[in-house]
Length: 590
Image (cartoon, rainbow, N blue to C red; front, side):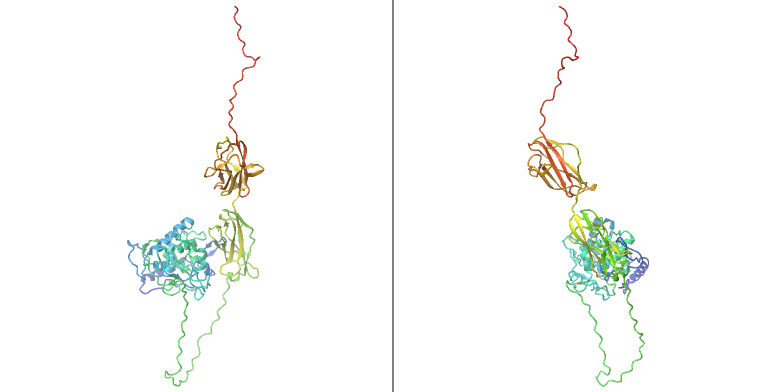
């Protein structure tokens, strides 16, 4: 669908000049978009990828508004109460809509700081997609006052995308439509939707939800939007049109020069659209009311004769036809995607990792023709399904990767979350209905294989007293720090009897009662575990403390309880007889 970009409007002199500027901009900024073998979309040429399926964009490549920003820089007004009339160009953005853009950008700065998403980009896309939610017709919570729907994507001048949501979002159970102020198609919203206003719902008709979803969508491949190539790629992934790219860039630059807040519902309504329907889409539509295209009636054929119904005059012989014979429509050359017959596993090994770790094995799928020939340059989508907090190394639950010269696509590395158990990664061909591949991945609990004490001092105590110092151990797994590993500590009866002792040393609970088994212990980020203070009852002797971790690491610590030695210290002994001590002097004679 060719976008009608920069159409002239009556009396719009500066728009005419703007169209010339944009034409020059289009000549210099016409990047295409493809995907490298690492799964990143990159700019590689002067045209968008011709075989990019509409369903692989946020909007399904739906129509969009082509109104241009004024040539003069925006000058923020000192007041926000001046109403804005339809058809004028201005830089104001409705208050709630502007708030949603800024909050979404702030959230992305925290979750994906490397993306460098400016809120003005969301504003530019929102302007082009829906005229800032039809001039800010939203309530205080950000919900549009009525549905904003694009046309049926039924292949009649648009892409053909059959219904994927049962009409839940767009009210159409036959074909999908772009929905809401950021114009997401339902199949994209299903995985890209976000809850931006914290109400527990993901609603494409809410500007806070839609703006946050758009931000994550634009940042999903680890793109840095402060660089020209990544910015272009992200915008083209939203709607795969060079004219769309240039128009969004124009509005982005315009909003960067300054804007101001205006009351909700007073924004400028757009008037021109890329499919030549002025102001017709996206239109506010009552929920559940799909629009059915109408077919114009055939003009009536006049009777060959007078109007009084009398006999007809002889029918004149028509001149020989000068219309050239119709040229047969050439059969379109199939794209690589059209030739894919199946997906095969390309030798992916067992997928298993401990909680919090990166899976060492990567998923590899191979696209093949019916004859088993490899199909390069086909987009494979990998999606994590099931209840799990695992994600790809990009931080997302999905990744789209282009097959290489041998028809293989390697998914980004998987990173396990804290949820243990199995989940599935499903590989499908983008734009082609063939059976997908399911890969089962397993997340095991964090484990340690070695425990050692961090100190060497003997642990002794007198009956009824408190042990000096606390027991601290360090856990490792294959030589690396084992953090967040579950552990237990039990005062056992003997080395051969690991049952809990009923006498000797003990810990104290919150009520100062004696306990001899501690559960729910966890090593810290450095693999360290420090136990609470130990106390002794009146029983003397040698006792054992055993610490166990998930993964089988075990350490036994010796504790001694002995009475204090109260015997006096030995005194120096008298010299024995026969020693060399001096003899007494003889008495003088009488």
